[in-house]
Amino acid sequence: MSVLVVVECDKGEVKKSSLEVASYGSQVAQLLGTTATAVAVGEASEASLTQLGEQGISKVLYDAEPRLKDFVNGAYTKLIATAAQKEESTVIVLANSNIGAAVGSRLAVRLQASLATNVVELPKNDGGQFTVKRGAFSGKAFAEVVLGGDRKIIAVKKNSIEAQHEAGKTATVEAFSAQLADTDFADAPKQVVMQDQAGGILLPEADRVVSGGRGMKGPENWNLIEDLAKALGAATACSKPVSDVDWRPHHEHVGQTGITVSPNLYIACGISGAIQHLAGVNSSKVIVVINKDPEAPFFKAADYGIVGDVFDVLPKLTQAVKELN
Amino acid sequence: MKFLVCISNVPDTTTKITFTPDNKEFNKAGVQFVINPWDEYALTRAIELKEAQGGGTVTVLNVGEADTEPNIRKALAIGADDAIRVNAHPKDAFFVAQQIASIAKDGGYDVILMGKESIDYNGFQVHGMVGELLGIPTVAPAMKLDMSGNTATLEREIEGGKEIVEVATPFVASCQQPMCEPRIPNMRGIMTARTKPLKVVEPTGDAPRTQVTEYQLPPKKQGVKLIPAESAGDLIKLLRNEAKVI
Image 1 (cartoon, rainbow over the protein chains, first blue to last red):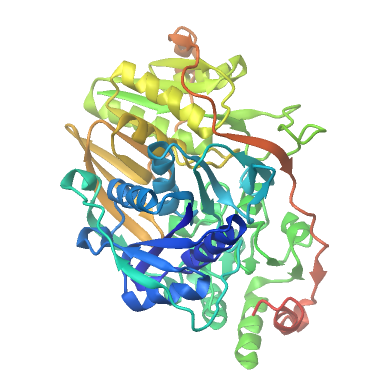
Image 2 (image 1 turned 90 degrees about the horizontal axis):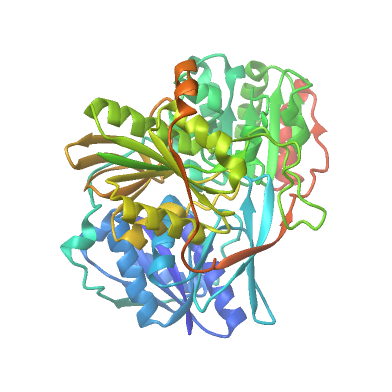
């Protein structure tokens, strides 16, 4: 018995969401009285994998097959399934990312495991019943779900678990081969195109987000959003109407049919707060709303609010952040 | 080419979510149900590709009880040719995936499309399970889908970018924007949908592997603290000293 943690790496670094997953996995291992092993996917470096000891990981399996640098659903599934069999893992933990969910669902069938995605808390293991809490109804509710069977797969929602850091602890990195064949790479990418991220911060991974709506009046005014985001070290986002009219790219659209974010700080500028938008942001820890309409429904979901003109308020906020630093 | 499009019946996006008094089930009373918005991308794109190929069929598949039929008819009105309903409550993702895989296998479909996830359960699981059950590739989530002969070119979204992927039929893709502009039914579509075939079949497969024991609503917010616009800079101090998020 063991817990297997899937860590996603990019440019040699372990992604922040995977540090959270590693912490989650080692806490599940403690709960079950066993150890947590990681299997790394993506472009990893030995130094960053060794550091996973800080999250309570004892061993990291790494297959240096160069084609695993990019996401390939078939190959990643086989790699993780092979690792799970080798380690006799009864619980597999991954990030609730595009990669984690795509691989987790195939693994569930291959390993005859039960699967919960979008999980927001550590599991409870009472009287043989293994229960997790997960987000449902697009952030409008939670569900307690019992996972059956001998094997369980858990995909952890980003920013719902704090990554622990026990300085100085290290993991051993072990070379590992899943004996991947060409047929496992049927869905290998012909090309990978990365977006230009404002300030290099990826929206789904961001701790802080500054988001603009129709109240920004046009794409030419987005420098106000970007200035505040840059000062805060935040990612930028937008509401659906804004991406629908192409003021901003679709991957910045936050909401029920866009991406769901759960940062520590979400600042909404000129967004009225339609229920579909709230669904994408309401698990943010602190929500700030800036809107000139005091009746905007978003204020009801906010922690802090400013009733005022975004064109007047945003430069003041940017200035205040600069003074603070 | 034969397209199979899987649709879910979900509460309208504006629905205020409530549960039955024992918190075990979603309270359907007074709720308008719609085709899952993500599935609309799958449906419209399948119809567009069929039209571009000048032949083929688009079959709509739903796992649900009889109350989902109005939305199945709506999918037929949008342009699907026929429909299959698996007569069962969709108990969990694995249960639904088994139904889809069984029908896909019997029907010999080339392309199996569905939305990225359903907006009620938000599982984002069914696509991968169907692919694995059938032993064929899955591309999820797909933002673009083009076909040339038996080869599909897709854009798969990854965090921070996209991958361009080519796969041969048969394959599964879960769809999201900006794949296409979802269509709405026109009057002619609504008229012809009434007589299009809708076959009802009974479920197969193994028992579900997960069970919801309780639903909960998120805790209510404490109420908003308003800062006067003139002293907007004070907000930043509150975020540092009180909320401790910067």
